[in-house]
Image 1 (cartoon, rainbow, N blue to C red):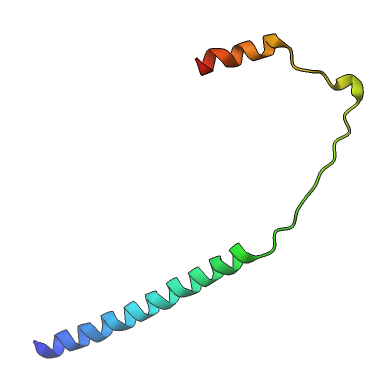
Image 2 (cartoon, rainbow, N blue to C red; image 1 turned 45 degrees about the vertical axis):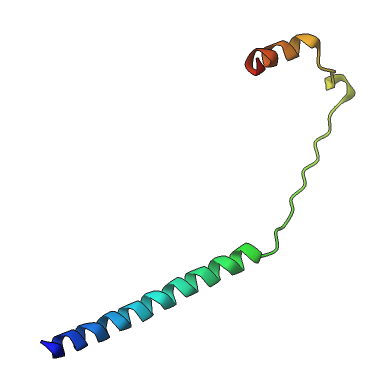
Length: 68
């Protein structure tokens, strides 16, 4: 009976060690991925002056309905 417990404990110890190593490798991979330099992407859009317009007071009326 004692022998079975020792063998089972050794198996669980090995399983826990393998599982710990896998979690460690996964966390290190996620850490490296999180610290990887971010490449910025900038897009420029040309807006013609005729397409620009100032907001009118009527455009704010629908917003006031949700705030109140």
